[in-house]
Amino acid sequence: MTTQTTRRGLIGGAGLAGVALFDPFSASAASTGPDAGSMAFRAALDANDAAKRRFNSLPADLETTDEEQFKREEDSMTAAVTHADAAVPTTWGEYTRLIEHMTDGGHFGIDGGNAKRLTEYAKRLLAQGSR
Image (cartoon, rainbow, N blue to C red; front, side, top):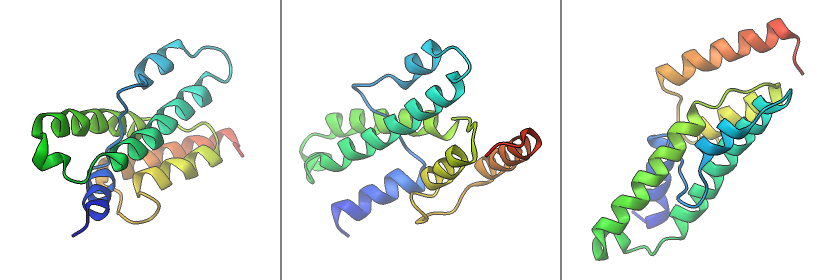
């Protein structure tokens, strides 16, 4: 199994997304105004994308050469994915991006908790007549 495959399983299978240099929690809290939901959503999903790039750029042997550093990177990734999983879409475009995130571009299934939230989001967007 290659490192990329292992990391894809880690990122997609566990629904991970975190980045050490960007704090998506602060970005969400700082967002205000009519577009605050979209700003917070974009911040969370952009942080997920950055975390994926960062994690996949780590040395392939990091897990065996520096287990503590690997664990920190893994924990950071986990925190960011958890935050991205909880992002609330305000448009159908964001809804689609959230599904792409949750399935790692269609490579993985959606777990029950995320499926329930996606259903609730779809009902809310339909009721609002969102585009």
